[in-house]
Image 1: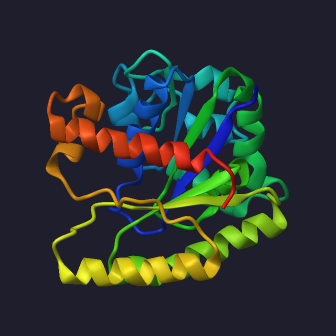
Image 2 (image 1 turned 60 degrees about the horizontal axis):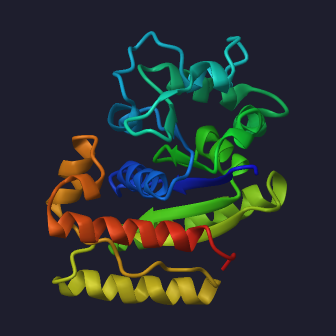
Length: 265
């Protein structure tokens, strides 16, 4: 069975895409799934947290698999993840940024390079998670073109809400031109500060936008908790952290993952 492929996106940085991808991967592995995490962000945060061994700056990675100037395939650059059942397509150094620039000036077919690369390994996995860059550039377009579903990771804040329409427009363009099967699998509200009036109001506004556009807003929001960042930075699943709070938060990620893998909204 070919893997389900999801791209985690937001053009705004700092919303927790990499953390969400990491904890989704953990939830899938716990469920006995074969998971491939693809680090499409030049910052390489998912690589630093999810790989079993450190990835050197000169090590072949995703950039090599996407560049027309390299011979490596996706299969050539995959490395083991921190848990059995998890593999990672890593990024390191500045090379992925260079490939982004290469794609900007490339001709026909530039949008489908990641899709074509992943096709060679899709049958090896149950789930592929693509952690996109915080931008709407050619790297993110490649991620959206390769995916079956988009997971929008956002905050309940004004700037995040303002950028949502632009992101949804980009998703719509990719759907129209490159990937007719693409759907928004769900919106994850991350780092939610439930005790603030502002966050409650912006969440209500976000719920209105989601309802108007027919999108699934996943509930409950993921609260802002230090334990989530601590566990992720230590390359640990929340269930491995050893506290009741962390375990309960891990269940939220597992439930959200189950939701995005369900029927299209």
